[in-house]
Amino acid sequence: MALGPRLELRQAQTLKLTPQLMQSIKLLQLSHLELSTFVEAELLHNPLLERTDPNADSDGDGPGEQDGTPSSDAAQDISSRTEQMESAVSVASEMDTDPSNLFPEQVGQDSVSQSTTSYQESRGQGVGPEKAEIDQYVSSQKSLGDHLIEQVHLILRHPGDLLIASAIIENLNEAGYLDKDLDQIAEQLGTELGHVEAVLEAIQGCDPIGIFARNVPECLAIQLREKDRLDPMMQALLDNIDLVAAHKFKELMALINCDQDDLKDMLTEIKRLNPRPGASFEGSAIQPVVPDVYIRAANGGGWQIELNNDVLPNVLINRTYYAEVSAKAKKGEEKTYLQECMQTANWLTKSLDQRAQTILKVTSEIARQQDGFLVHGVSHLKPMTLKMVAEAVDMHESTISRVTANKYVSTPRGLFELRYFFTSAISSSTSGDEDHSAEAVRHEIRQLIEAEDPKKILSDDKLAVILNDKFQMGVARRTVAKYREAMGYPSSVIRRRQKRDMMG
Image 1 (cartoon, one colour):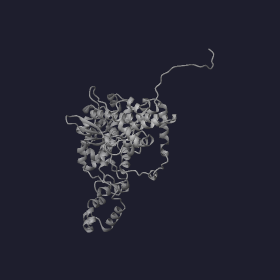
Image 2: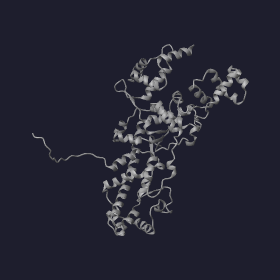
Image 3: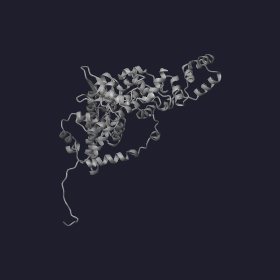
Image 4: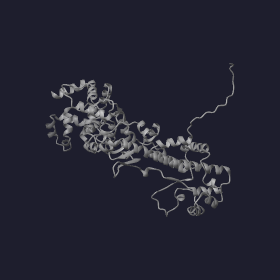
């Protein structure tokens, strides 16, 4: 068979994402702030879109005047007449134009997509002759909450621990102190006080040093411990620091058994510390997280899922204005531009509605699968993956990932990110039994270590055997070691030395 160039005609079916479909996917993963910014830009770009205010007085000015849409007496007359019309044909007859010009079908998608895409690329250059505000060039300062969240995600791995850390961060004051009692946080999240204390101890080394303290002595102690200067005498001074404020130095020296020179050196050391570690972030105070969706207990049992309408952008299409302008359009470019604006507006309103329905559907499934957490607390957090939710709601895993990104839900247990409810599963060692969540495994490891006999310290291998035999948790030794280190427990050798020293 001779080799040579030739032409062949083949038919093939391929699946391609249109630019508008790609934009719809991007809208799904935007937070409510990013979505509001996107919609505001579309309102400036598209004259057929206008913002609606559910609380606005219907007797007030028309939306065209409120939102800067071109308005005239003729447009108001058209609006009053079209409200009483029953069909698109009657509207077209009133405007002396073709019905297809008033309510065009979804045609010319490529031109609309190209127009939208080109606008998105050039949106940073400003719109029209208006110049950018000088505030746009001011660098934003990271808040204390964002600064701590980044560090917490490096220290803690399990969603249950992250939930507790998030609740602790939300209760910090401007100085960086924890205002809420740990037992109240434990009760709110439905977990043990020791679990909350362990998480607090793990994150107290975050920057700035001294953050997460409950009082001034603890704040100073954290900073001194970081500098390896917290000896017993210094700790005794911190325990009686109220005597320093009262200038009762003789009484203080007698209590901590030190002389005047030692006291002077320790006070000099304390003066170098920062009693308000969160003060450097006062210019950008922790911003409250606004939930995108609410989970509330229903009267007849179960859970009621509601979207937060306050953060959803409300836009509609001003078809009356479109009818007026399209009737006056003479050139082909003008009609094409109006058609593109109408098609883009239709796409945006449909995409916003679809986004809201998808968030509701996914959140409802999360509430169904995590009913134990909502009722009893973090100790009942079940293993749940993106695949489990995707199969239940008949969507792709990537869609679930986008829906849960940057979205927050308000529950009876507090305010959490949707992604926090996805936890890994530990397979049961006995066939037929349900899988165990990683939180349940960590809880049992914690209980075993806390209750171990100082003379019989449990190794990681022994812990794995107990979990397998007693709780039917098929956990490997390396998994036990990983969870143990994440919870801050040292190895069995170090624990044996520590408990031997405690016994004297």
